[in-house]
Image (cartoon, rainbow, N blue to C red; front, side, top):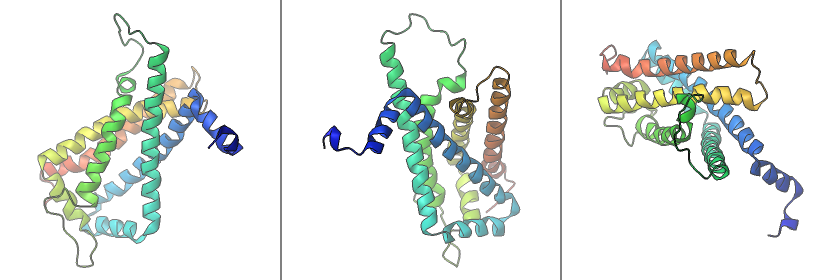
Length: 233
């Protein structure tokens, strides 16, 4: 296909994505989608503390969505892949713009969260796949059960899954990576939409840190509670 045969809107979109601004816009958009999912996922996870009936009813409602749930998962997967791809391309552009490495580099201005963004994204992507295999599909679960209705016994599967120290440890470690990713990602998202000002930047950073901390603590509280024996199968 020649360049002249490409529809004008597609050509404009390709040129926009080819720019640094375009890639940052894609990262902001896909990051917003991921952030919304993380919040919703946390709210669903916390129903664990309401007991087996509440958590299993929540899982059944999700499955009752049918094709809608598949579309949501597909959009989320595409968002994650596009987010990682745009991040890698931006990193490669920056490397090409500065081909010679620093003789001595000291991270005086960058945070640990920002320095781990490139590799924390792929780590989280592979963890998502494992997490789906473990608690959604059951293919990596040692004692995956279903209710008499045919729906997964979500409560049992969560408790049984997190009773394994390795599985619980992997989840906790992934949530720590997620926290670092969110701290920098949420702040960068606000920057990408133009909310960057010396007066507001500290507030945005504090907001990003606070939200990331709440998400991490809320998520890891479940495997920790199971490992400590507060919840039994």
